[in-house]
Length: 201
Ligand SMILES: [Zn+2]
Image (cartoon, rainbow, N blue to C red; front, side):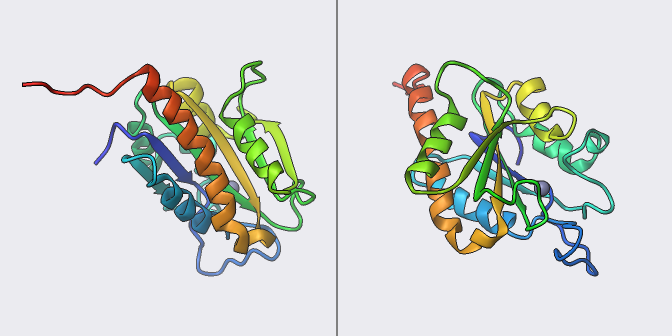
């Protein structure tokens, strides 16, 4: 089913081609699928409509996080999940030792430098409080095309791109819970301002 998701958890680099290993060129995000499952689990405490979209094509065939994949079935389906002004995007990735992010445990990106405290700030604070080394960046619109498509162009309410260090795989449940806390809080505020309709006979 499509449409009307509160949260889209996308894992574009999920798919591993049979011959690929992460040792050299990092052709897929080895820890991202598991982190995404834990994020979804942590959101069941506060939300009803959370969708995981796991990439179905290996990156060596097509990079689902780039503009040239916009017409793929996977990208189309992911776009259909957006409810303008309501849906949040959590785009999940992981990195290895050769990454430019290797000094961090987790990197959190979004598009804004807004004064107002947003989802990114909240997740960064949650992670730092628990002692994680966190990098905070702007999503690059020429690289992070899912973010650009879903948040900037389709009008999702907000979003974050998460990059987790693959050495921290065992910490996935805790990292996911800290991300989930930020998402749940964001919806608490949203539903206060947009109370669900109650049918009265
Ligand atoms: Zn990735």
